[in-house]
Structures are given as C-alpha cells and as structure tokens.
Image (tube, rainbow, N blue to C red; front, side, top):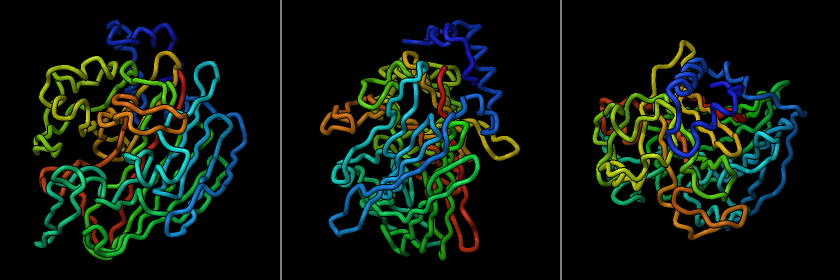
Length: 401
C-alpha cells in the first residue's frame, strides 16, 4: 500500500470496520501493488546521514558485556542489544514528524534476563512451539525442554534470546546496521548439530529495516528463526492496539488445539474472525465467541501467506494506527506469519517508558515457518542438513499515512 493515500480515506478505517467499499477496494488494489520489497520506497526517504554508535548496556551475572548499537538514517532510529540480538527501540515519526518508540522493551539488562516475553528478541533455534518438546528426524527422537504448558516454545528454557551474540557493524552507501553471530553447540537445548547463525539487521535510506538470516549446521537439525518485536504504533506504553488497522496477505491459517499446537489443518479464513484480507481493526472481532479466539485469548495463530513473487518475496502484512498515522509493512521469504496480540501481558512489569504493559497493548508479526512443522509432514519443511545454507529475509518498512 502506498503511504500517499489521502488521509480522509485512511481515517474511514478507524475504530472498527467503517471502510467504504470503494475505499477498501482502493486499499486492496494498492496492497497488491506492493508484492516485493523494491516497491516499498514510497514509505518515505530518510533525510539524514547514516550513523551508528555503540555503548555498554550491562553485564550478565557471568560477567559478559552486553552492548547496545544505535543506528539511524535521520528519520528512523533503531537500537539493538547484543543480548538476544534484540530490537530494543524503534523510533519513528508520526504524520506530523513527532517521533516515538513503537517497540516494547526494557531499559535494563536485568529485566530482559528475568522478565522479557521475548521483547524484540531473535528467537531460535526453533521459533514458536513444538508439541511435547519432541520431534523425530532421520529415525531418531529428540527431547527438548518443556517451557510452555506441555510444549517447547522458542527454542526452550535458554534459547537464542538469552545468549550474547557477537556483533559487527555493517555499512554501505545506502544502509547501516549490525551483523550478529551465535554458534549453538551440538545438543544445546536438545537440538542436534552445531549450528552457526548470523542475522544482519540493516536500516536503509527508504526506512526499511532488513533482516537477513543465514545458518549452517554440521548435523541434520531443525530450525525456525524469527524476530519477536512487539509493536504499538501509537507509541510504546500508550495502551490498547484494538484500533490499529491490520491487513494480511493470508487466505488461510493453521488452527490449534487447547495447548496452541497446530492440529495439522490448513483452514480458509473466509467467514471467520481470521480474515484480514481487507483492512480491519485488530479489536473488531477479537472478542467474538470463536473457539480459536477463546483458546488463544485473542490472536496467537500462524497465518498461511499468499504466493511469493519471482524473487521469492511475498507481502505478509500491513498495519497502521489511525491517530498517529504510523505504519509498518512486512515483506518476507517465509511462508507464514504468527499474529500475536499480547494476550498474556498482565501488567506485572514496566517497560522503557515506565508504564505497565497489559493484555492487548501490542501486536507481533513473527515471520516464520509453521509451528510444530517437524511433526506435520504436510507443513513446509524446517530441516537443515550439512552442506545446505538456511537463508531467510524479512523487511519491515516504516512510514506514515
């Protein structure tokens, strides 16, 4: 979707689904036009120089130094920690040029280590859930730590989000950022193979945050790397995201059982509260009496994305907040996106701005392969073998409408 949409057209979407047929059609048409990252330049151009700085953020109990890298294009500013290769802050302007941080997080390492529900983390070795913490690969069954009801979540009790990654600044004429590297030893959290993962986060002059994942292994393994940033486009700590407008390029989703494990079914979204193919307020149907929403306490589901273009990239999602006009568009090479609406935030801790985070105060768009894929042969494979290289790219484009 172009960020040059007239404001009066955008505001018709505010509050709920007050979108006229003509406006919805126009938004749908422009969304189709942005089926690759190259077409996202209309989101706005950064007006300053590409700059980056580094300082100490804290130390782990073992004495490891954790740094924070802050890089900017003069319009968007990103702060990232070597702890968990974590997106700590994303500062973007509203339609009047007023900047706010739109990413939930903490201002100290202790809270990230003890409290964080993966705020902005690079998660792995396997993002999302694996049923009963078990999978079988090449005839051998592997047991992972159980840390989410009866299941394993986001790599286990000590996943990649709780590791200090090595960092190196990367810079080109048009982008700046950091490459993070972590080597996971064979058997860590029960996963086979020594896995070397590198994730490069770069911000370019068109306000695109590109995330490029690479991984190699010395034994057959499974992996599902993603970033778990929590967005509130009105500003971190500003309250509910119910009025945010969401559009997904997703004709289907994967229903879950009572423990949030996919049943194996790929179900059409037509006629359900999971149909976001037209721009819809996140809160418009979140309290509907639909069994899947009851199970998840809201949206906590994997959406099956539409076909990719010739370059392997697909439009995944678009979200915006009507009052501020801030928007984010997501493109990815991944086949799915987990939409999570902060259902388990309970106000028990305070974030960067000193405000408590409560249920529904943020949403996540976790680009990914499907949850529990190792136990569902009909899902896209997440197996990586020696001699292969895992590659994945996701782009968040920030703008205003």
